Image (tube, rainbow, N blue to C red; front, side, top):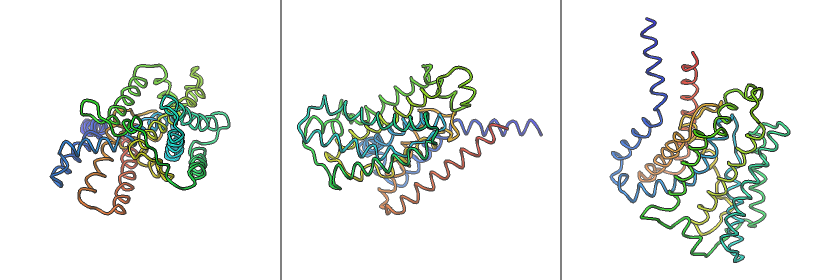
Length: 320
């Protein structure tokens, strides 16, 4: 009897380890059956290009969730930094100024979140919720509620150009994930992130600079939000005051579906990439089937709820 239970537990652990790949493969198979247009090269490239913006944010969100934090401000930071970038371009500033300044502003927002969390001990949920509202308000003030339209061929290339037939946003996304994979797997910074998420007090007692790591992680989250803002604004060639609304939920869903635990300390960046692709495929299939956007929102909410439920159940099995 005991041996049978052990086999079941091992089987469930194996399913848990590869669940994101199983879901991804099953969804692709179902999508190919439901729509003849899904498996075309143009459609698949379009799906990944659309996913790239959310995926880059989700890469930063992965680090934050690994330390048992959360960042609800990423969508508003995207909107504000995108508006600033568009404003600088309309003022005829060169891209060598626009891009670093935009990224630095995103970094600053992330560091502000990290400062409130580490220095004053405010929960990240509250801190980032407040900054979400503040950044959105700053965007509306800056844009006066109107889109900021830009015209710059070099800037347009970032979101719409191709290198060797591959859209540049996809290349940027893959580069970000490769870098984050290296950081988490091959550096002491990455090991510290897992240690803090696993047991923050034990990490502190072992000499890990917990507050410094947390501050850096939130800073990276803000930086990647600004990078996504550059791609998003470049694709549309305008900065929308409502840009990024709800993207924080998509990013969090991608991270959870990818196997990163909301409790922190467990998960990885590869799973997040597949989680983002799953969300993108779901959107694409629903669009190809002409499903109303209202029902799409319901489907996304159910996917997030299911992902959290599955994570909770498998966590209990693993700790028995």
